[in-house]
Each structure stands twice: as C-alpha cells, then as structure tokens.
Amino acid sequence: MKFPIPRLHIMLTTASLLWGLSSPAFAQQIWSGTGKIVSGAGEGGTVELSLSIIDYNVQFLSGPSKNEPPFQLNKSTDLNGTVTMNAVTWEFVQTGNELGVSLSQNNPYRIIRYRLFPKP
Image (cartoon, rainbow, N blue to C red; front, side):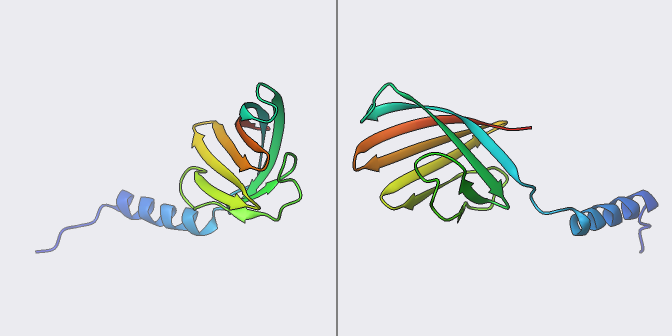
C-alpha cells in the first residue's frame, strides 16, 4: 500500500536542504566587555577584553593573549569550551547574548571573570 507524500512536505524538505547548502559560514562576531580581577595580582581591578570569533576560531583583539595565535573552540550551538595557552587557561560559556569568559593563570596568580557582549 502506498501513502501519498504531501506536496507541502516535499517543498519544505527541499527548501531546508537548499538552505543548508547555501547558508553562509558562521559570520564574524566581535565580542567585547569588561572583567573583574576576582583573585590574585590586582584583585578588585577592572580590565577590558575584545575578541573576534569566526567559525569558532577565536582571536584576541585585546587583553593578555592579544599576540597569541587564534585557537578553535568546540563546534556546538553555543560558544563553549576551555583552552590553555602559555600557562593561561581560558574558559568560554555562552548564555544567550552574553559570553562569560574566565582567565586563570599562575604566574602571576590571577583569576579574571569577563562579561562580553556582541558588538553590532
């Protein structure tokens, strides 16, 4: 027994396949904001951070890792992940339109928590 496939279903399936094939790669996002030194050298101070993200590749535009090469976060629906570079660990947690970034380092010992927002 054959069941007819509704035309609307075929059109929607075709449209979604074409959208997937023609949609652009993850566009560049610039995130910036301030952070607070919550522990260690400079405790209580406020610092700024800006970064560029293209296809989950992160490039620091300012801050302690400005001159480091880009690195890639895990590909998921949000920008979440952890990376260690030159004895500095960065943790990224995206919640909606906010990107929480934490820096942990040992020399000098310091923990900074940033709140970044996308620049229009």
